Length: 618
Image (cartoon, one colour):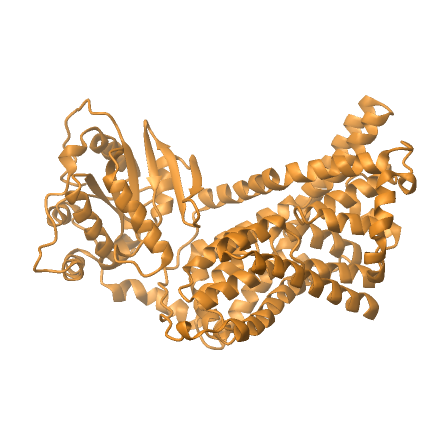
């Protein structure tokens, strides 16, 4: 326990506590433990850097983005450091908690000593949380935190955010520090005749665990996962499992949700009785909105798998593996993470491309991210695959033909993005981009994921997806139901207002083997791709699917969608930029309406042409 645990009571008013540290140091997990994972997440205006805040007792704890040094290299670091300087000047900042990685003490102290000196300069209280203390304990290493506190001139508390070692004591101590911040202003700064690097090296050598000991196990695993041959095989195997699991693992949950929706539909509509309200609930709510909710479990599975890759430390290694092959297409290894993030949502992925130092590679990455199959496409893929591909399983249900089809669609989006990248690379190259920064990436230690925050992240992703898409799908379903139900009010879709509108656009989609109902669903899905499912659910519900509510796939199969038209429709959604929010984000990030709407038109034309070809081949 630190020697700085002797406190006196004070009546001073509490101010904000800010948490800083380098990336991959357990800082976010420490924040979760201190706040009980009750947090709000916001972005700094105009940037992708997250700022998290949560309640710590009576105080507000703010988690600042990670940085390796106050001397920045990347745009994200520059923004993070700017915000740290602003916090130091802010009278509402009372205490700075600097998170140190006990397994990589020297690297953490470079930033930690700079922050300590900055805190002393601004008369701010500062304490160090020596995180991952359980990791060094596994190697029978002990850190004398009392002596380390004396050398650093600030309190040091050994903690493990993962195993909760020292967390209770740290919470008590942090409350006391917050009550008397003036007593915890750092006592010293790095001497002018020395450097932060020399001091951090000296202190780490005296108190930290030797790097070779920590890296021994990591290097053993890396010798396989980063092998030029075996690493590539492992990478493709992991990606295959990722996309296979989206369909295979989520199927039981999807069946459960569908059964619940069907049960609710029968229970509710049987009580209300026949009439226009019954038809509205059955067709628009349970048929449209309900058909969309069935696919939410797939969003959760996708978030879970990506979270596992990130928390285990493999995601950074995947970026390293991809650097050389991506460079052939005019991209960077740093493009991999925005690309993978794009499979969740294109909007934050486009913003995450700001970490790519090369302007040309950054632009190419942003322009091709919309070709990644985002979570909004999942309901569309799942619906059409269920219609077109038999549910055949292998290896005791671990693999399925439908899951393989999922992988092919995702892989097709990636391949299309790489081909487009090559073409863009030829037209966007400029002389100012010749001398580029080297590709530098820190490889975090391999760790077992901490399940509680991971599960919370999965549940939050589902909630945010429903909150974002649900209102849009509800409004679209209501409008489509109204236009499709009236004026006849007798489930006569052919005589409805919607049919009249649909006849105008049917010639556009007829060459693809699709009638006006699919054309209407495609057009309204520009608001959000997943609206396609809700729109079809409403349309097929109006036509009479009382016996199979929310079973949209069976209704489409019974309607006779051909294999060629269905495959063409899948290809269309792989390529088309059917998302107005993505177009707006591209406009904001590139600063060009021409690029944003040019991509919308270009990808739309490519999608239509590809769908036309596929529909006539099969």
